Amino acid sequence: MFRLVFVVPTGLGAAIGGYAGDAGLAVRYLGGIADQILTHPNAVNAAMFNVLPDNGLYLEGHALDQFFLGQLGFLPVASQRIGLVIDRRCEPWLNLIENAVHATAVSTGCQIAGYALTETAVELSIEASDYGYRGEVADLEPLLDAGRRCLAAGATALAVLTWMDVLEQSQIDRYWQGLGPDPIGALEALISHALVAELGVPVAHSPIFEPSIVSERLDPRVAAEEIGHSYLPCILMGLARAPRLVPYAESAFGRDEISALVIPEGACGGIPMLVAAERGIPVIVVKENKTVINVDFAALGWHAPHLYSVANLWEAGGLLQALKQGLDPALLRRPIKAPFQPI
Image (cartoon, rainbow, N blue to C red; front, side, top):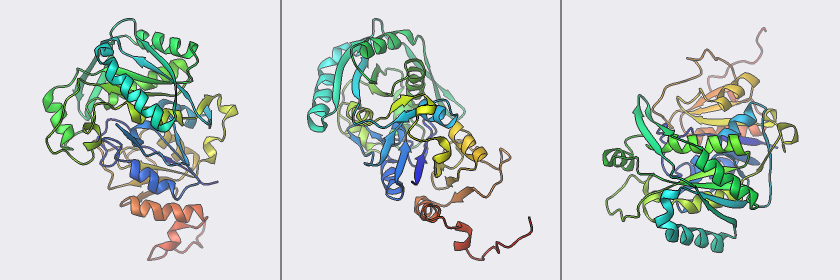
């Protein structure tokens, strides 16, 4: 079976996948080549849309890291039962949240276990960094406590909603126009990573903002976030199909059964990338998918024939077809490199 992993690290302003589910088409395109494609919420979540293909597995970033480290596995399930962990500060907008949950459940059939409000407000902050933004949660315990209450009531996955009043308009404007990374991306990843690590179930995060109508023209990659009043439907649709997290020894398959990993340019320093490079799993870097950082394999001292660089996703698709068929991709290039060489 040809299994592909598609990763776009959160908060790095990737040209494809750094905005609002704008890597969804890439996941569908590459998923059409693979028998199975693993990806993470950031790649396919687009507010009211989620375009995870039928052969896709929706795996939160921390769980994906732990899988590559051989510490955590997963098993596909027919459906998850989703509990909603809601920041106490979102309480004035419970009617809006309720409508979003009911609309998604009635139209898609996803199972909802109920919701739990945090006992106290969740205090969040962000600050600019050299490469974008970083975030901080003053105290995770209110979220963890509400998550435990959901799990005790029968939930098997958690949708986490927090009130996001941490942004300045200038930060929002740059993101809306495609001029910089998602200001809350790193903060959202921090929240979901921490809850997966502590509670051991699939988690995805949805920000809650005061509803407003955006009438200005936006970068097409951002537009999905501003055509409605909720970002919640996409994570409910994704979590409904998330695999169950299990010990690595019980996993449906192991990391060495991954056929290839596709990543943006300059994003080679993450755990999946480094483990794949070390274990001989083909890694395909897509140059057109630029990020705000520049960590490449050469800078890390890696030079190996299983580390590929392609111009765009079109080329990535062709390379994956060759790998899937067991062909040596180098023999499809000209001038040809003669394979008969001394070792």
